[in-house]
Length: 159
Image 1: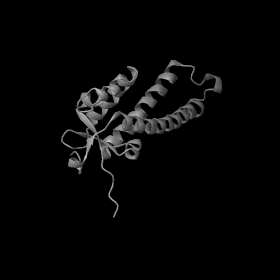
Image 2: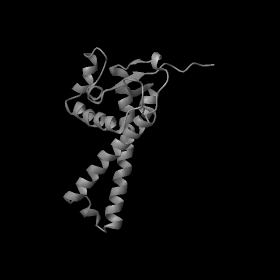
Image 3: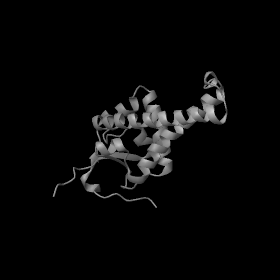
Image 4: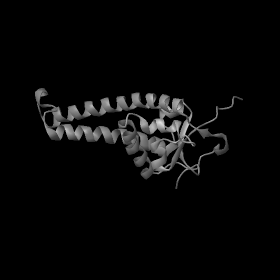
């Protein structure tokens, strides 16, 4: 069962600036995850497969397996964050949340669609994110393709 978020009346569509800020934060986190995965992969190749230092990364299967692990690791980071609480660490810092139109946490399928279309959006020189400037609902290509919304949360009240 999908988690239903609160504060649905107090949120508004996220603009490009906030999204880029969160993307920068999350990019640094993904970079750290990729470094860890690469270290573990090289360690596996050296210690378990017994290849010498000059042989690391020389084979097609070594490169393919590392690339697959990197893409999968990044997806797991985003999918877990989006499905659990609607936000990554970068999104938390910028008070952003991804949710369905009805205010629920997104599904695994929606996470996969968002992730894949995000790569396409970036590959198109960021056009998928610049689309926010032209869309009346401030939606990016990943939002449109996955039928989700990125919203800004109100500041927490101090008591």
